[in-house]
Length: 65
Image: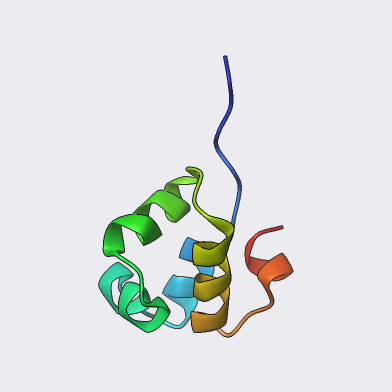
């Protein structure tokens, strides 16, 4: 079985701000479905992850350890 789940801090930082999934998606210029996938730990593109880290105003390594 292949484990494609990646642990990240997207939901934690998003809720700290606080932002809804839609608001974060808008700030990152991504679809809300992409944010939802990230929060579930599913595989997403590195470019999308970089946009989310920037929208959260956090270093990439802090959001996606």
